[in-house]
Length: 199
Image 1: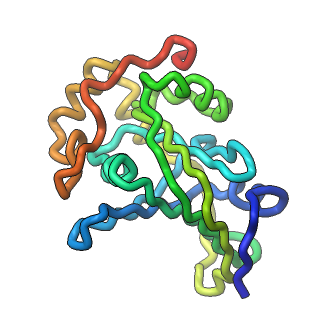
Image 2: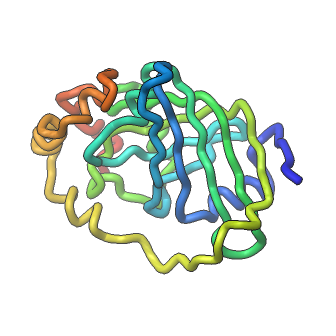
């Protein structure tokens, strides 16, 4: 039987923070628009900011659908599954916002991720989500799977880029500055990483 939570704390917070993988789901307001579902990994790139707020690092990629949808309407659902231990699924339904590098809140938010160096990953934004509904469910059909380690391919690829070359990479991609459905996506050129966030 699923349970609804008023806050993200205690065992619920521990469960969320322990998972090496989570998923994000967003959609445009247009009923014919493209629903987006993305897996998110990289240990240390997710944080519980407070009992109602979570955040994750939005790294370089070939699209920016989540950013575009959040800029348009803010709706987002995050989901975690227990692939080991007791079966459990947790969903956080809420309102999300991409905080870009030139936002004065960016350096302070980056402080919630002390265990990760964002530089090799081409950090584009920090996605901040305010929870409106937090629920769990049984997860009986989720298979057992083992986590070995993060892949190094993402950091191997993007550690070669500086802010200027990263912007050029994004500008060449069809669905970065504009979403699949034509919504504003990642603002380009990419602002420089704030000095206090760089090291």
